[in-house]
Image (cartoon, rainbow, N blue to C red; front, side, top):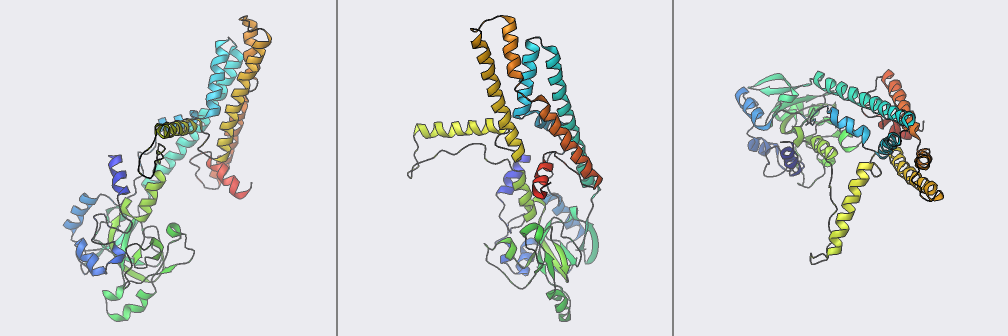
Length: 393
């Protein structure tokens, strides 16, 4: 079911409605938008019609995914090069009956996993609780009356009223200025309608809207002056809008879907102009794909810069440890004497900084506690590194 939603969102065209119109809404006059949506610009939708549309299009909410996943959080704590090297070091230590060293490394691994897991798990649960507490509302015209409706129940075809200070929550509407509804002396109030779209477009200044304008279908989101976008805040004036897109079909929904997408999992085959490709090109693509998978699993090509450096350091130290063990064995003519083997393994294990992971985890946890005191929820410990890189602290 999740795959179907993702595929549906991938085929969605920017500026289109949940059910595609003849042209994107910003390229049509508002009366054409209302006609294609089956909307009533005077009295709005009837209650029965609104309910049927709610069943057809679903609730006006962003897809938050499967929610808190303890198993995924646990795997995230283990699946990195440094932890895998420590696990191998623990296994080798126990294998040569070095129980004290093996126990120390096991304690380090468990401490790191427990601290990281509970920090991320509690943060995810807190975020999930905050989402359930949020219940924004909108003023919609239903059966000729202005009603306060939960934004989750707003549907395509709804007429909504927008005023200064409101936030357009998860729906996109074709702006219809108030002078189209009332007498012409409302024109000044309508002309002053401006929205802050910084969250969506990055524009630092409020954007003045023009309900009479129509634009080319390929016009970018920032230049669609007849549309009030989800997540934007009204900074001046009043307006009415016809809702034509809700939930994941809005611009902010498209961004959310893109952020959640895992991206291509395979490398494309390099082909000649005629479309053909030799066997070596297929082998190259498979090799690169396998390299990407291994690098992703070990953490050398994903995560923050510090995480990548630590993963590469772990692999390097593991290689040095193996080389040191081989040198010790070679110096003793590769004797199978138990003492020689223990000495070789101990020499290799001494190259692995077992406490480094714990020191980093505890440091991040301490930083998280400081952030909590400032009323900031840290979902992932590694996000503190990115924040530190920005502030220089």
